[in-house]
Structure formats: structure tokens, C-alpha cells
Length: 218
Image (cartoon, rainbow, N blue to C red; front, side):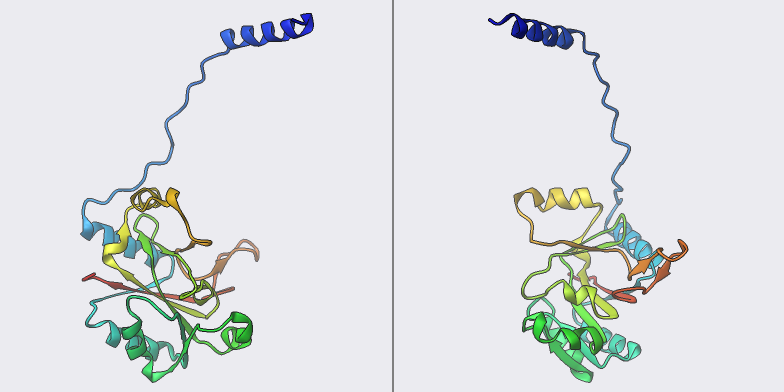
């Protein structure tokens, strides 16, 4: 063996033998855990409310009336929605007092209307995180992410059964390592920014209002 190579290998072996054992500290983060379903839902609502979201609880049966009332309160004239989802029937019933605009064509064909004419977008929620009061959306061709990011008001429908304690718990429960969509949207309140003089302001871009309807019997 080449003497130079032997010398290098000898130094490497010596370094391995004398290398100090590094102590790996315990993670500083400990996921929040609820005592029961009641505490989980209460904490979720508390966290979202603290982030300036508006929370309503309803049942499957009262959902259409609750949605109709909200649409009237915000004065929405044009409602954008997806083309499929668990509560599409209820959404269509509630949208009869406004113009229902389904997202059924490429955005290039109606971008101007979406950005300037639509008053609210309604989406279903894939899951929700109680620890941080966060909605988890998995956009797809039936319900693009634009619906939750562009209209001045975002109305989100979430089942109480979809709540989990933490993001790490959700990833484990749903086996995210086995496959994810192209995009995952995490929403913890209406749009906000602190770019101007480091003062937090809401409604600077995207939805100025976030309204969440929690369906408690699902």
C-alpha cells in the first residue's frame, strides 16, 4: 500500500478511537395532548379565535341555515366553491341567496372575476390541529387552493372528528410519509403581515376574514 495512503488511514483510525462521545439532548418541543375530545375542540376554537378567526358550531342538519345566515351577514353576492366535497349539497342550498360560482374552469379563464368580483370562497378541510388552531387543506382539481387564498373571505367547513392534537400526531396518524399531494395549505387565521414598521396588521393580502364552521356530529 502507498505510504501516504497508509498514513492517512492511520490518522483516520486514530481519530475514530479518540473522538468524543456527543450527547444528544432531548427535543425541546413536546406536542400538546388533549385530555379528551371536549378539551381538544375547545382548545382548537380558543387558538383560532385568538388569531382573529370566527368560529361557529353546527350540525349536518343545521349547516345550510348557518351558512345562509353567514352569507347574509357578510353581504356576499358571489360565492366561489369547488365542484365536489362532503357538503356540496348543503353549500348549494345555502348559496341560493347569492350567485354560486363553481371552480370548474382553468383559472386563466376567470382570473379577473375571481380576484375582483368573488366575495367569499368556501372549502372543505382535510384535517385540523387543536394545538395551534390550524386548518389543514389538501387542494386538488375539485377544490383548488386558490379558493382559500384569493377571496376576501374564506369560509371553511371542518368536522369535529377531523381534529387531532398536533401536527406531528396528524402526520403519524395519516401516514404522510407514504404520500402527499402537490401542495398542503396550513391556515391559522386570516391573512396578516408585519412588514410595515413591524406592526401586525390583518387583511393585508388574501382573505381578510376567516370563518370556520365546525360540524360537531361528524
